[in-house]
Image (cartoon, rainbow, N blue to C red):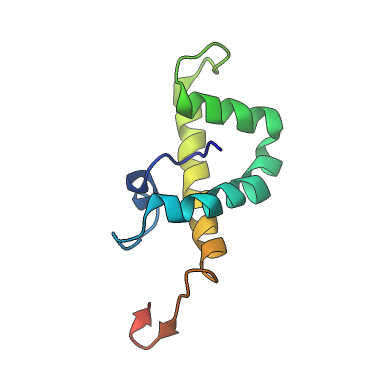
Length: 102
């Protein structure tokens, strides 16, 4: 399934994660966050259009304003990066202590 993120490098632009975390591990939680939070806000049509724009820029049917789509994608990625990690946290066995989050 497609996601608004295509790599760990993109995710690291919005959240601080350890370099040992693979994109494959986090991708299901990012997609879950997109389905649960982003898709209802954008609507199914705009969500699909956004994914198509990310995965095939310039394809027929893409919005006329690339600048507007790029702004939307940046804002969506910022939210989904955090929400995806929130959904991953119980599975990723995060521990909070005086030494920080581990």
